[in-house]
Image 1 (cartoon, one colour):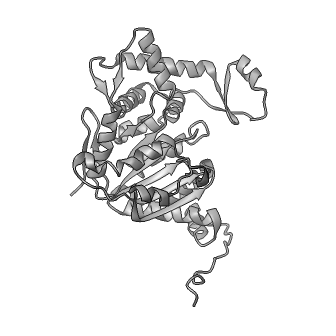
Image 2 (image 1 turned 180 degrees about the vertical axis):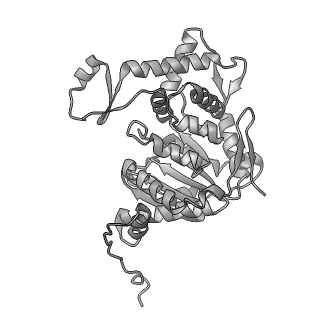
Image 3 (image 1 turned 90 degrees about the horizontal axis):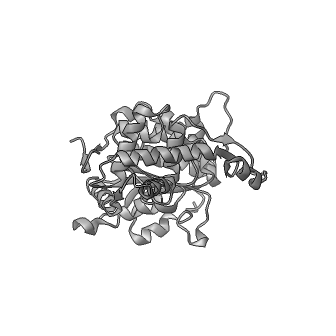
Length: 344
């Protein structure tokens, strides 16, 4: 038989009683992005069954779009072990954790009128400029409460912020869940967000002289990879979070070692590779850098992440509900110096 004609496409049958897990499993027998979605759930499931540190790279406006509880679920149930995010997503998480909202709107509006009304727009989602500023004030005051005589990693900053929000917030989102679950959050582009603005405002007002050691973040990421027998990645979009996780696998020389590249890799993106941007960059291209293992299990879903991510996470939750509590996973010490340990 011709080697290209071995596996027939399986027409997707509709069942009135099928679970999301069953639907996604059946989609793996189809084609196009449906197949990739099904394969992504398979790769993620294999990560959970292996002795793997799982990184999540979070870009795009996922939290304003309603994905906060999806990401929090991943943290609470240890479907991931380390989060690398844009500052924007972490700010919008803080915004909702403090009991504020993002609102359904429309992209077909007069934005000059929105400006006069104090409303900020992210495509079809609105938020109050006054509430946005109140969130920045919260960050400014929090930064002023920290020890101004030391230098923080972004991991330390967000761990302490998550602990503060656990007592003062009204909702349990990403930052609070991570503080309670003991998983690290890194934000390599902290200054490129409301956090940067709020901390800078505090400095201008003489309230803080806070400094960050983002190079130590790089070293810590290398240490996490070094402590792992293998690593897996889930990327929502691209940008700085994606590259920050990718580059951890080529930082072995910092510790006098050579890392093999990520063993498992899943990404959800709506971007194309031919423009040369990282968001659309293929895993095959990453293999040329040594960022992804030559024999890695990898799949890309070209889809809006607000569609694909909830479906995959729901399928994983149903598929692995019994396996999640006994998953072999790393434990982190997050107060002060980073500590990493694995069950023997």
